[in-house]
Length: 106
Length: 356
Image (cartoon, rainbow over all chains, first blue to last red; front, top):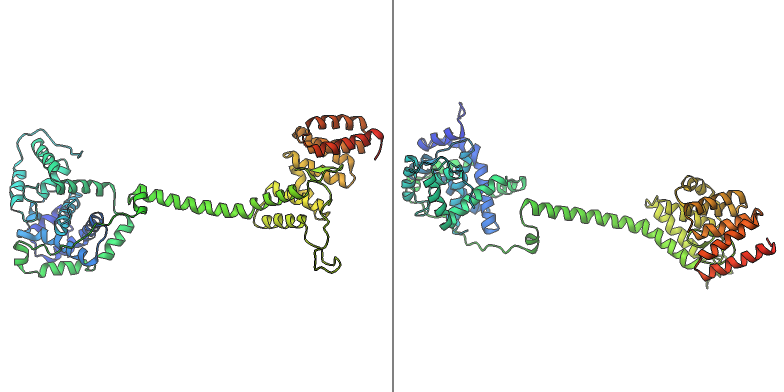
């Protein structure tokens, strides 16, 4: 449980260095999980016209794996200027993940 | 054209960006030579230097993936997720956030640290958009246009049904009288040229009836039924009331009296209604009331031939023969229907001879 609620940017920064902290992940999920799902679902619909539940689950999982890969390099590289930057960044990561994972080129 | 507010004119690439670009090459999840996700974010937020901006723009011209990502970010920014999209996405995700987190944290380190295999490689066949989707693309404008057309069709359909049940029935009843009840006679005429009496409505009993015990339905009955049905369905126009009054007058139905009371306030607005009210009083032998209404109708519409003809008859009844003959002469100059002309000439002749 996160007591002193960090900003979005602080949360991503904390996760970059404590990527196995379950409380931080729970907070991250609470804030961003739905948004990541929406981005993935819209991209899948736009690219493929449809999305299956098992594919959605795997793609969302891939997004998280990408954030964690190489000692959370993607999270360490993040430099947000505003609070909304976190959403934009996760959106970029999610979009690239969908494109690469599905093999569909825009 | 990508929109990017390039910040400053620093020609040198910032240390941070250099670092990000350097690390992006080693990033397994970024295309080789692709701009890193972190730098792409800076570009989108207008935080890159001029040099960086130029390099990224050049890259975007070459790389369909990065250019698609930038385009999608702008699109998502300007097109927030709709409630329907959110519901759909939530339906598609079976694992709860807690399950996702637990699964993520329980993965062996090697799974995260090592180069991750591309687990998901579904063979999608992009669907060809249907005709409906092509006509109404999945944009807000397209959806709005589709919804607007559906609503208009519904309203149009409802209006069409209502029109059929009311105004169309009135028109049909009027057409029936026009066809069956245009009798050239020397008596007052209702607006539309109908005879004011039941002339022509008496029909022989049909075959199978026993000595006329059952009265066969006449066209006046049919017209009356149509108008009453239309009024029951909500037709409240003056035209509907006027037609019903005409039919009741022709059928000599006592209910015409109450309907006439309702129509009287409308006489000033409608010369046709004034003429029919004159006919009502004429048939009740109230010549002066009839004269007043016919005069009102003629003033309202000098080309209403029924009113001129009827006014001449009313004046004749009141003994104003000269005025009646003058009116008939005016009327004959206006009338184009040979049948009515002959009827008027007979009336003129009767007045001149001093006959009733």
